[in-house]
Amino acid sequence: MDNLVIAILGCVGTIIGSSIGAVAAASKTNFRLEQLEKKVEKHNNLVERMVAVEARSKSNTHRLDEISREIEIEG
Image 1 (cartoon, helix red, strand yellow):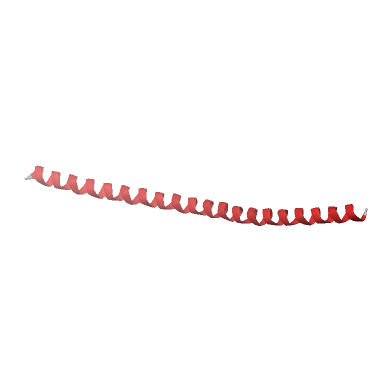
Image 2: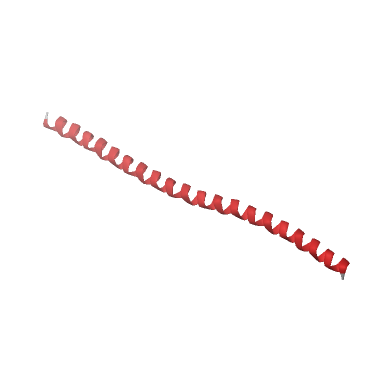
């Protein structure tokens, strides 16, 4: 009878320990995912800003080309 009680307590302890370990691992995984999401959001914001900068650069290049042509015509 004592062996049965010891076996049951060992099994319960194993289940509890495994559950605590699984919860801790899941918590750490969730934290890492949140940090990764923040980094991806920063990257996406940078990409959006760079697209805007490239568009302005292209527009400015066209303006400079037009001004250069006007100067050549006048000069």
